Length: 173
Image 1: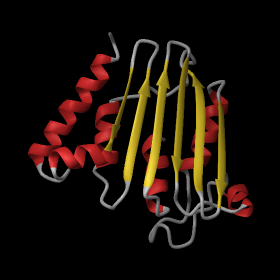
Image 2: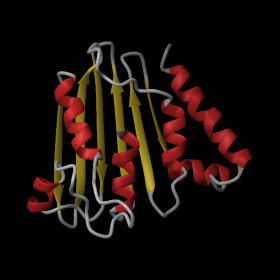
Image 3: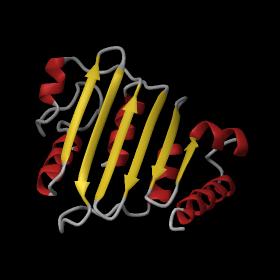
């Protein structure tokens, strides 16, 4: 779900996408905010329909399952989800899930997910803030690119992956 939301922002022409992921023993909270093209009220109403996707967004796809699955997951896991958007200003999606609920999907390999998100092609920045009850970190795609030069060569991808894994490991205290 996180990958889908960030990718939506990049595809909407965002120059900056902010991803906040907060976990504690009881809750998983995520916020994805972008400064992309945004959506009008009519589009906002339609995006919860799995048979709707923005015309021209995906050449071979006729459905848009990302938001409907997010809303269904939030409801099934004693959580909540919200979407705010304004044309020309961007979109913010938030969701919170009960971390103890049996149907809550695992966060998975977050460093690998973040590396994949930062490796999308394009001229955008992704600013990630990760919080736990013990500690937090913030890292941006711009910082990684300034340090490594690119995120296409295998050597740089390995360095970035190891750095993101170290940041995540430090959250465990």
